[in-house]
Image (cartoon, rainbow, N blue to C red; front, side, top):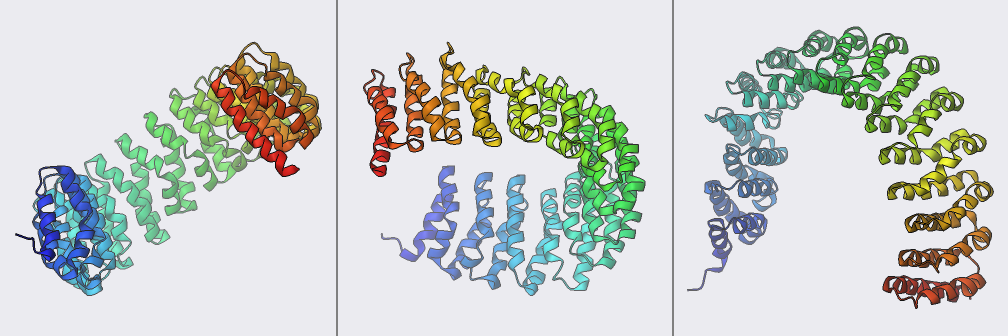
Length: 587
């Protein structure tokens, strides 16, 4: 018997959603919007949505797909005035055990609620929030915490009072998971509440959460400090939020103290500069001296940002002694966190304090046994240079930089190479030639390819910085000397350096000095060298005169195109083609 055409989509969907094969069920869920379009708005409301509400699939992936699809379903049910029909299936999904499914259902409810009319929010959305909050199983109560901020703004006063009261009960729920959810969403909910009710209703809830016996709830309340601080008047914030932050910085749980250290800058912004100077400096110093390395790591990472709020005098008096201690901390991760931000303290403290107090710390971190610590310092050297000037920098830090140029960890050597052009710019030609010139050549014969590659690029950047005349005197002769190196990998690096230098040096020097060396390497015994010669010659063709291209480069490529090695022939052929095109264009 032929299947009735209008019923066909829903029949197929029902069939596939009941199929044992999970992939079929998933595909069916992903096609929900197509099925809804085929059914039309009315049948989607009356048949598809009720079916989805009843279909409690046992597979989380399918349920998650359904929760996501329903979030964008308003156009398929007839627009915003019918949005409420999407709430029942999502309400069911908010009660399942799997967190990912619940989170996706809550996300979709928020999307739908944000588009619903005010009276529909009062008639349909607020009752859903109340039902979930009163649910017997903790999962529904957890989900409810995340949607109060959608229902609250459009509710009449009586309902608003009811919603605040219900949220208060959730903050005191027997289950820690519910209290955690309430602490997480408190900031979002508070942002929708009137200032008068904020003090009378929300602050007591917040205080309850800050004194919770579970550290997982208290650490989430730390985030609430910053969110609530922005909503309260400055004097209320200092009176009610500041004592909580100070207490949290001494909490018995290291995870709570870690959260305070991590959120410190946001907390300082919430309470204001004055309260930070008087009350939060001692708290921060305690965190920098904390017993737990994780707390010290978080606190050390915020040292520059914190000092920016303080006056230089306060920073020197209170924070700098802690920084000196942390630079020799037993944990390498603490030292690394400090090294990544300490350079930013130089502009805050000024020239004299940087020279007297910070330079010794920089030097000790530059010589740290842990490569990440050394790397962090090198990458931020320019911040110090702006404050103390190049003379002092070169006297105090340059010996350490030269030492690091031969560091056993290649990443440290790489960081130094990448810093060289900037250093060259700051040091000037004379100083650079004397101290760092030989290093740049030395790196071309490093054992690690990445270093050799970076060294070749470094030469190009130096030639651009100091000009072709300087490069002709200090770079080109030394580079060409290394062309006869016994190891073919080093000869390849020289080829790459020639390729990079040629555009900077110009046609005359390229033809006179660089091209003959490349041509001589076309007779190399190693095929890898020969096909790289073909590549380099291809890059040189646009830089030289037509006569050089025809008389020198083309014959060499023709010879390489008849090489016994297949790769050499291929690249020579490619280069020959490109060479002929350039010659034709220029004729």
